[in-house]
Image (tube, rainbow, N blue to C red):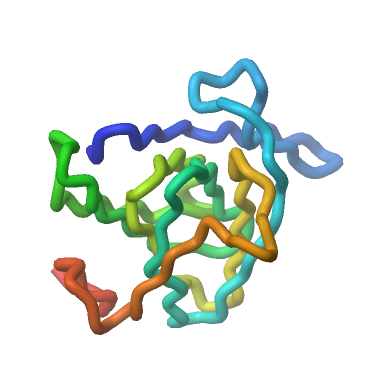
Length: 151
């Protein structure tokens, strides 16, 4: 596991009325502070990535559909420099992934319908000076290919 990345198993509590699932609480080990909450979506087969932050920690959960979330540790001082982590998150595997600064991340919708991701970052998005640094999802130095891997 990439240094600083944390995984929280999310518990779904169903009853005859529906279900509830807590994503992030201020008494969770992964909680640091609240910046904002937003959702982003991807259509089947679409890759959104790569990007990283210099200040912000992300707390990502897929709440509809399934996503392949991939992380790459670009921090030369890290014990896990160069490591890639792959997580399959969503309705069939409800997880919260805590991602530290300078760890590249991206995701690909792997479900047959649009997937919805909720992110609870530690910082508010600054429209004039965004803490978001992007690279092309397919042409870059990251040792990862987004194609499906049939084993």
